[in-house]
Length: 159
Image (cartoon, rainbow, N blue to C red; front, side, top):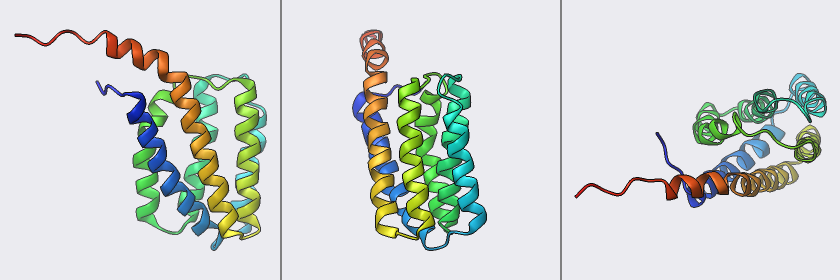
């Protein structure tokens, strides 16, 4: 089983921020009306998931991020985003966002979707980076007790 430290989780979110901010900027240059509609529909769905199980929240959040990565037009970037997101997806499937967290995530997603719709590369990049960094801080805060417990429960090495 993969044992993560707070530093590991922070690093994963840092990498996500780098990759996903670039995918948002690239998507802003290639956005279609159909993808724009889809992004805002996902945001609408998120507004209904404030008290939903973690798996439902995660499905909407993941769809939003992967839709943008796909819209970047780079299959390699899309694959890298999916790969680096595997660790956050694993933890998020068990830890639900609070209603306030979901509201904030939705607000940030709408900002990102709006910047992409306006084809504002710089703003899309900035907002996505800020959003993933926010999610990373939240993940470390929420996972800290679990991570500390795991680190404290490692058996002593055998002589």
